[in-house]
Image (tube, rainbow, N blue to C red; front, side, top):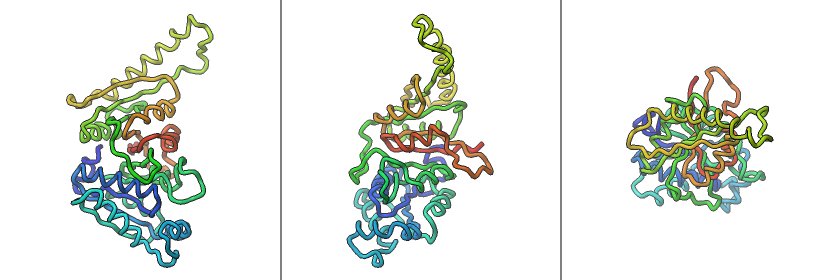
Length: 297
């Protein structure tokens, strides 16, 4: 489903903690909420303070004991309103851990927007544990805002939405989400299906290389066509198959996209990290924001 199909009156919700990644997420979400004419909701989990105290104090230039969650929410709300005048913005401080707060918000949000990570000594190129947990378990789409490290969310400079097409993707929530995202932006949708020949099919023989590859490429083409069978006629849809590891194909393509959409299966009753290897890798290394769209199985 697209952002506009889930709950008509639901807000676009952002997890804020005062860090630069969460500010970029706020900027990105403000733009998206304004585009759709929907409310923007900012939430701060008060238990962030237990392990972000020193970072908060440094960023705000004040002793930690003088900093409250309300200050962080108010600053983020002011930033969103200045970026998008007229946007309806609300904020709330919730007394729980960030994962718990955001997963509860996913039950009633249009979508959740999060930054790559909060403050820590680990390079920001890697995804933080909060964002990873939320992407793996949320009941609504989760957009992880990647691709900029200058405390500013970039506008849609590439004018393209990218969809990673996996096996059995026909009619999936991720495909429908990608249709909607391309439509509302008025940009092309590039749908990519990666494929690989089995390891036992050697390419050492130059006479056999193309022969062994052809059936696998043709299968990828069929799977791509099946997944996009119900694409809206007015959509500028560009289909592409590519040989290689799926996560590397998508990471390369993300350099020329404004949003990468990928599905994540949710198995009922399963408590583990419900992200496949491809989604996990893309969340860590994509060059653009990544939308993880849950699919119940």
